[in-house]
Amino acid sequence: MQVEQLTCSIGAELVGVNLADAIRDDSLFADIRAALLKHRVLFLRDQHITRAEHVAFARRFGELEDHPVAGSDPEHPGLVRIYKSPDQPNDRYENAWHADATWREAPQFGAVLRCVECPPVGGDTMWANMVLAYENLPAHVKEQIADLRARHSIEASFGAAMPIDKRLALKAQFPDAEHPVVRTHPETGEKILFVNAFTTHFTNYHTPARVRFGQDANPGAGQLLAYLISQAYLPEYQVRWRWKPNSIAIWDNRSTQHYAVMDYPPCHRKMERAGIVGDRPY
Image (cartoon, rainbow, N blue to C red; front, side, top):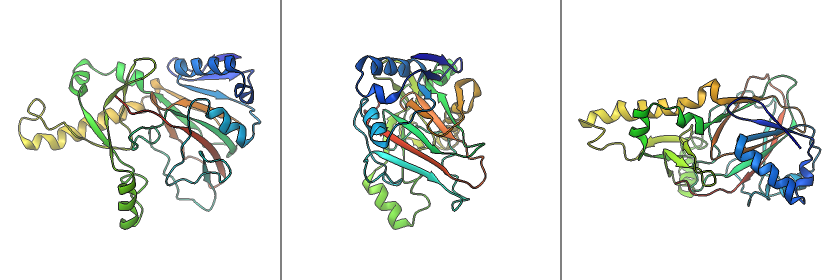
């Protein structure tokens, strides 16, 4: 297996490896996992694997979970189908920087995403290194956010376009989760900036140390959150991957964010994602 680094900050392509072999080969899987921790997102071309093999490989990292809004393959629970078609010309929901399912109390560990069908041009996906995003923050900002916590909401994202009764039912099933603004990677010990498109507000900003008068909380908290979320937008932290059928991406959802670029004309784009159950951030 060859590991070809794609940028100075994030991403590597694995060459000369078949993911189906890693289902049974412990040494090969250990090498892939080590590369994932180092590069945060891994890419492979020409992986002619079945859905069953896709699920079996992803399960080597941990148990899989379905998505309450996006449908899964009925024969392979945990394999979420992200299908776009010309019949959905206005479906541009994915184009926001996010880490998957941070609205859960235990967001995903990561995911294995396979391209089934894609446009000839366009429809790339980008990933950002949120460890670097934290490391490069000014010292006074790091001090300001060291103890901050924030809410992440499925109601305000996937539920926003639903009728109010369905939106409230979704929130009742998945109450807004609260996570630290700076989480610690459970395997590497790295500090990670952990706010994204699912983040709605800080929960403990309004303290005498930060707020002189009550009105300070309004612009102060919102502007700080917008600034922190915008750190994923910096190209220096990013890698961009052009999809082809049977290409695969594997990413660490704890230390990255990603963005599905919706720049293609109405056409089919079919992706299948195995999302891996994660742990509670601390």
